[in-house]
Length: 200
Image (cartoon, rainbow, N blue to C red; front, side, top):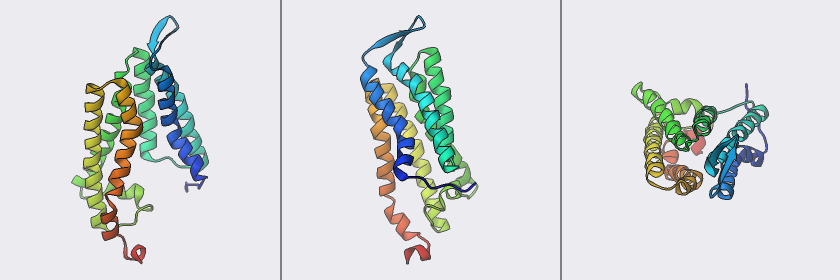
């Protein structure tokens, strides 16, 4: 099914809204504990519980409006349900903190599998956005593969050695900034390996 175009502001709201809502709710509830069904929960776990249906709702709306979801959006939604659900069920915030690690490892190993086969799986999902020569795709795929593994390691270091509040700031702003900076530094590669028609 062809992807439908929707208002870019609406698309951004559906993609990033759950992350910002999680951050805002955490700031409001982080210092309190709440008794639900006779069981005491910290604010972080309650915010995690609320983020699961919100993420599923936004992902579902995005699919309904565009007719398309990326592999990362699908995997993210599944892992939020699984690891967010485990955090709520076991009343243990560590499972939710592991989610970014699993996401980056899954995609890192997927790209690595393609690299070992001499293929760029990244090209299969992004070719329409960035027309590059074959060599350019392989270089970019190797860089993003290493980048994903680096982010997975960084997330593990942050959540295991720093406070929950520090991790929330890192997840909300640090990871987003890291992705932005990474692609900004790839400008030379995009220019060098762009297809001739796009250069003109």
